[in-house]
Image 1 (cartoon, helix red, strand yellow):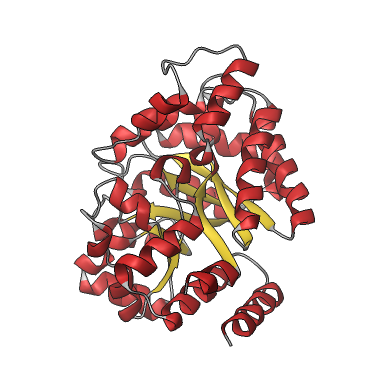
Image 2: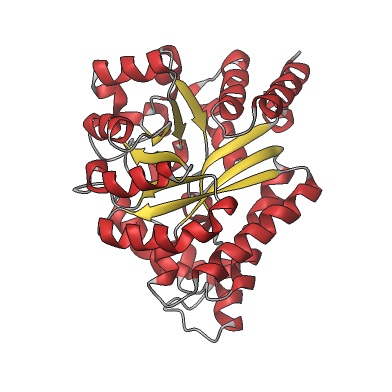
Amino acid sequence: MEKLIRRLPKAELHLHIEGTLEPELMFALAKRNGLPLRFASVEAVRAAYEFDGLQSFLDIYYEGAKVLTQEQDFYDLAWAYLTRAAAMNVRHVEMFFDPQTHTERGVAYAAVLGGLSRAAADAENMGISAKLILCFLRHLSEDAALRTLDEALPFKDRIVAVGLDSGEAGNPPSKFAKVFARARAEGLRAVAHAGEEGPPSYISEALDLLGASRIDHGVRCLDDDAVAGRLAREGVPLTVCPLSNVKLKVFKDLKDHNLRRLLDAGLKATVNSDDPAYFGGYVEENYLACLDELSLTKAELVTLAKNSFEASFLTPAEKARHLAEIDRVAA
């Protein structure tokens, strides 16, 4: 079954590119840019990756992102992830990026987008397609999100969607209804983090008020039968991140994770890595961990791989090509 996981073509739909910043690259970029780090060594950074919830993770996540200051930094960051993903047979990725994390520090939006989009274009030579999703930070104001959207619109041909991330507690999707409406009017798709630490009602808000076509995380949907039933009925995909959910105490142990129950409930769940440098595993490790701890069957693994492409923003023809390859590998 491990060989099957490695051979299956996969798409990754819930990946924060800033969350792929491995400590080694963090130190290299800090040195290149002449920036101090409060950590003395790579080992000290890794030792800090023990979190008691989402906010404790975000605190160190934002600190690490401070080493990203110029276009080449963002290229190197994305390229490191994309080469690793390609080796895991990831054929398509839709990566989140958080421009506000950088523009608030005086980094130009064009530098962020330029580096990421160059890496995405170069990845085609490795047989991996990549799209960018601009995420608004929900702990900041909607006015700040609107300013970010204004800055992004001249380059909107380089992004496929807008999303919503950062601290969920106390920051409901309804807070951002106006900016999402404007983004959709500009032809951008919408996704949103909901139902990770927030209640199932946040999932409903993301669907009804933001126009989200995909829910990031969404694991708390099973706490509300009506919400779970709607997601199944409407075929709304969930981008589930198992190792992240354990690392951030959404579930005490991977054995307790509800991935299999999501599938049993008819939900279009997918497996993703979220912030793999911080959570101890890229997408392949997430599949392998779920295989071991949840005893996933071959049919379930194939379904998860297929779901990842069906839930993507690829064209119908591109989806069909990847799905056909999955069938060949699984035969």
